Length: 461
Ligand code: ADP
Image (cartoon, rainbow, N blue to C red; front, side):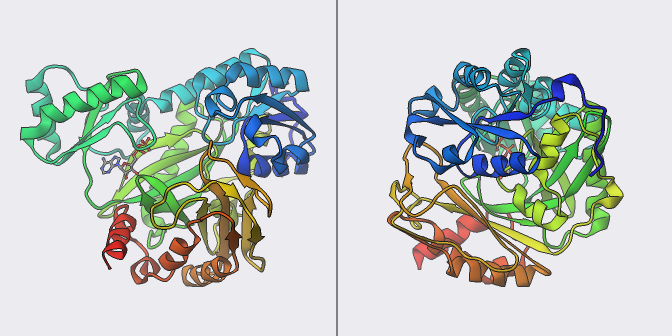
């Protein structure tokens, strides 16, 4: 990798506070150590004994078990960074990772926020301004205006007619699959708007809504980008995250099956162009819906994503290290021509939950066996004896495989899942094993509704 003396003063740090927990805290620590950086872990009272605390150079307990009082407590985290002598904060994913005010507060406290600028986070955090920025950069978006819906009922009706039913009403500040409502036909339009507006006001603090075409059978395909502070950006190929339950990704893969270079290339380049246009720094993901051969931008995630390993496996790029180096002010050591994606990768999210009801399952892991072998990677923070707490999300491990072809990667995942044993708590492993035996999934190119329909059929059988 090309090292550069052109680091800005703000980018000079030798200690990183990781404002997160679980597998991603372990992953970021590993990247920091390999770059010769010291790490500061933070924990809540529930995580006091968690092993990620003992592998960091220092550990500070920042609050009670409730995330609101610990991992989301901005003042406590900034104080911890000061006390531990950290020069940078890595937010991981979730928690404060897409909080523009936190990124701003960190920078104001003299810390480097390992992520984009707070203004990039704010622009992309509002779905209307994100859509406007993407349209301006030539990224294809879902049909519909890039402005908030007005109050006038007649104008709203005209917009819906222009788009064509079915349409979807979305909250500008929405997230986590909430604040959206599908409108199949005109007679329920105003009622849907009133309900979504009220929901948006309560959940996101803003009544701002917009309208777009509702796509009926799309796939979820996303593009990973990495940018430096010197006007360089590349895209690292694409992923398919259509295997979702309640808008939550369950299995991800790279590349997306059946997507030929001719069709994805212009979209990838448009994403790069958009990054340069908005002065984006660090890693990010452009999420698209893909239907009938066309891509439609839905949102950008301005952070590291859970599913980044499938892209690491195919591109050979350590995305977390690249992200940290970008924050250090290094010039990106990759040109687009250097990016070559090889083989196929799958990731299974292993959750502590009942495989049928999907209710979270807390408790002590009494036995743990993890698979090994060529092309198998496990990102986890747990061990035999680990106590899964009820306070946080249920992700306990990510099982990742890589093989020359999609069929071989599926076979490798079946083998890896067969070699994964977790006892003492319930996990979704039985469900994942069954999914990897499914014929339509093996064929590839299933849409975002496939998994829920498959679950419904299984329940009925
Ligand atoms: P969030 O920020 O809440 O995750 P997104 O805008 O990313 O919201 O959308 C989440 C999911 O909602 C998508 O993955 C897709 O399943 C569905 N969705 C969003 N917009 C549309 C649309 N225009 N047509 C069909 N489905 C959509």
